[in-house]
Image: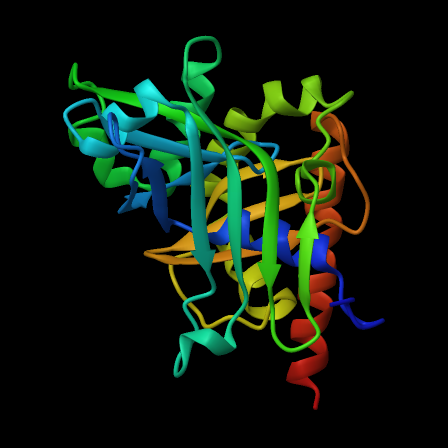
Length: 249
């Protein structure tokens, strides 16, 4: 099926990758090759690819170590009939982290603070799924297969931003929780809550309140710390303007 003119499949797939905190992971059983499915927690790399923290004692981890091919089902978890919400089936290979482990750990713990209690256990390891494609289902006439370049974020030229991300996230959460609340309630029409920043990348900002997640897309790409600060100030101004408009109506 072809998407309708008002439907951006890449944008929706990106949003699901950024907002999802749990998913169904399918691996291949060692020996038999039979399909095996399990529920996992996940976070996202700055490019949007999924990050897993899994135990080597788990069946799915043993399967991955023998054959890295996996698929991951993510859905919007909408109220009512879950089949009415958008979902993606991501295919790819799960690779154990070596270089860049600190980045994966930081972003995972931002999404799942409770994992701090076992992240240092020797049997646990970080894995990153390198996607080969995804199948998006978002309703009638909205079923699309996408290549990785259509749903992952290009990090080319964004080294400065990636270096600044940790400090920016800490600063927003320590000093600008009121601004995070404005982003959520005025720009994204979300309910009030204890919103905090869990990460940023060239295309947007990720926020979370408990298990509720939001994605704030930037109107244009940012690639360094200075551009990020300017963008956050700009969006805060837009949020305050909407707040003032609502107060006068």
